[in-house]
Image (cartoon, rainbow, N blue to C red):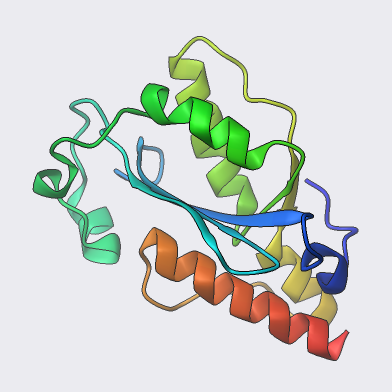
Length: 163
């Protein structure tokens, strides 16, 4: 996890993407993955993912409002993996609480018998806490993948203005 980046560097064209996952539970399977270009806000991925029979716990459903019916016909992680690797190649991957998202993605790779690719990760939650001299806190906002990455980008832009 690399938090030596400045907000201005992270928002430069071609440098980074902002990623968020929603899961069946805190230690569960990915059921949604959203990625935007950090510089432009362009949506690169906004995909529901089939957890292959793993149920969505009630507590997770109350947070992200994704249910089993929403996932009918969604591709598996194995099916979306090649596109994810294309989108994430040579980019800094930013996420709010990045260790959580990295761990969930690594778990999906492990289920495929693969190691997670070597990517440069930056935790925006920790970056914000460091720059503001405060304790980290939750992102807030909509709590679906796309809404979360858009809110995270707004927070990163605000950090650029004060740093």
